[in-house]
Image (cartoon, rainbow over all chains, first blue to last red; front, side):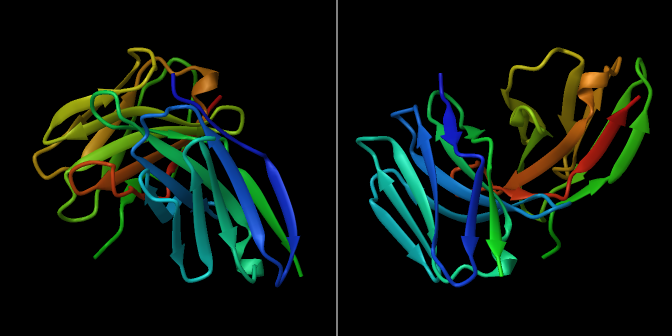
Length: 112
Length: 113
């Protein structure tokens, strides 16, 4: 079955780059996503990447996909205190109708 | 456009009761998915509705059910509540499917005592 794994916690200093990593098991995934959840709120879609792409950049966010290793990463440049949140990696399972599987979430702490 | 709204935001119920949660998707969105979020299990997919039909279902017992109305609004129902049902229930909408990402509501925090 499909599974998505993430480390639980990451701490960085303000102004540094953050790299949040994720591994997935479903080789037939077509789309992979990064969501952000702030305290008391729902999830916010940050970006997504199609499985035939290696990289996607959107302002301070860079997504890298290594399909061979089934590894996805999210790099946040110039991390700000407002980036403190939980970041979820997710994939679409392509068997039949689409079902999204989420990782457990990585809590990013930004130290001023 | 207004975002996804969920009501109520907070709910306290006792074991054995039933509960109904409501979700209004973004205008024009026809797909609505429900998730259960707990600290131990993370986000678990409950079901997805599209055009008033359940299109996909996660691995939850039959006590969890849902429906979608012709205006795409959706409700989920949990009968015979158990302590383990305490969670944040999130609703997410998308235009037709989840491939381009989903838009989440703020969630309903359900506490079962």
